[in-house]
Length: 310
View (tube, rainbow, N blue to C red):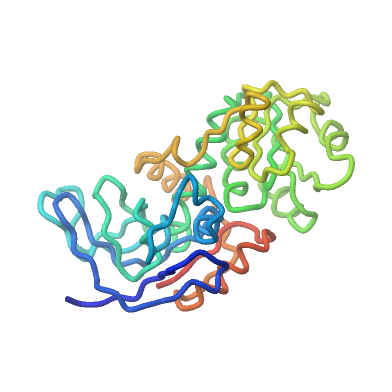
């Protein structure tokens, strides 16, 4: 059986527990395809699984692989596969913590064709951030004339969410560090830097001094700020981080699992292909430098996505 390189870790810890090992290459079963991975995004949720922070909800089984996002070329098609053939360029996802590798097996309904206009890096980084942003924006029911504030607006999810929110016709206030002002402004977003007196500065920046909806992509008290300080109705607040606030304030918590399908992924990829959505790529690393990639991610100061290239 041929081998491949893949990320593994055999106990909880910081990025230093990650190794790139030679392991057996998987083979596709019925209804599955084997994808030779060209690019695979990394995500904060993977770091929290690796360090044991979410052990009670999503425990790791050791030795564990890693990674959900992927883009690559179909290397083999299992029995019964009709939608894809060897050589097809695809993007997709796995729920088996397995995409940070040279090859990954996925069900054919978890991939979609990649158009040439979509770069490997953007395609490989799209699933978690893109579907999370899609679900969060959909949850707060934006319409023309609304004003929505978005925390962590320059992060992997935030950079996509602010663009999708703009497409709804809403005015978008993007909360981020000052180094992101130019990027946010270039995408039609009003930048508001985090820090002291944020609620007052958001209200001042909002047309009519009214904020109708709030996307909390960071946690750390933004839900309370939205509901208590800004008066945003709880049903128009969505958080992907502060689960304690969901029970306390009655806000929504729609995220990746609420838009977890190849149809949404194809819709987002098509927006990229026609130039109506961009996925900023903060940095790329070879698979062997996976530890460095996660150390950079966990500093929480990158704009957009970090991508591994197996």
